[in-house]
Amino acid sequence: MNNLFKDTKGDGVFRVYSHGNFGTLFNGEERIRDAKTFDTVMNSKNSNWKNVDKMKDPILILYACLSGVSTTANEAIGKQISKAHPNLTVISFNGFVTYDTTANGIKNINIGQDKRDGNGVIVFYKNGEYLTGYRYNQFLQKYPNFK
Image (cartoon, rainbow, N blue to C red; front, side):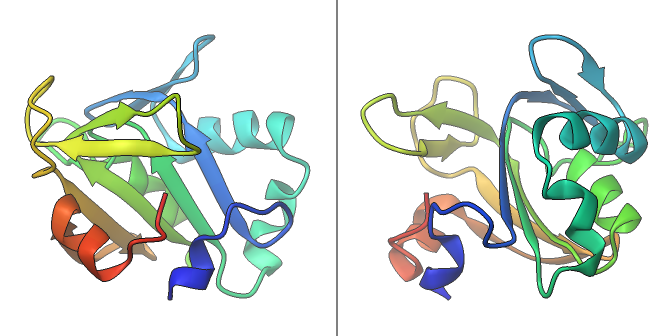
């Protein structure tokens, strides 16, 4: 499974770095509150996205705070996107993402803002359904190459 998360282009793995909140992504220009808007933005930024539904086992990693959290008022944006693209596995986070400028990727997922505890949760969705979740620090023990 570690090889699925290589940082390469054209491999069916899409990485989105964004600000996030309950049911929302923010790319610095606009708020993205649903899968349709997400698709519009992704199509403008990545020419491969238009083929996501034709790819074999595509993966979207949403490096955004709270992208895997549903509330009574807002369905998790990761879940919404996975529902719109049934073949797509969406990896999102229930917690706060800490970026690492010295590395390619993120440093940690924390349960609380500025906690730096690694106890946030990595959440997997497919076809609008929750598949599984792990505490981020436990996930990294199992898949140390994930970034």
